[in-house]
Amino acid sequence: MTRDVCFCGWRGEMADREPIYAGDGEWGLLCPTCGHLDRLIGWPASARHWTLTEAARRRDRLTEAQDSSLL
Image: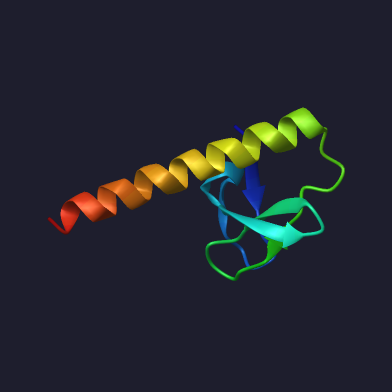
């Protein structure tokens, strides 16, 4: 897993960011602290796809856990 440091100082795994549609058919990852959008420009398509898929999986798992705690 790729680690990242945002401009704001946030540190963590790229897949811990929020996957966001950036327009024009592109997706990016949103910093959970400041909202900076990293479009993963320059990444190979396979690495970009895997990272975005993993970020979506983690988001869904977190959402399910939060929903379960409300029951």
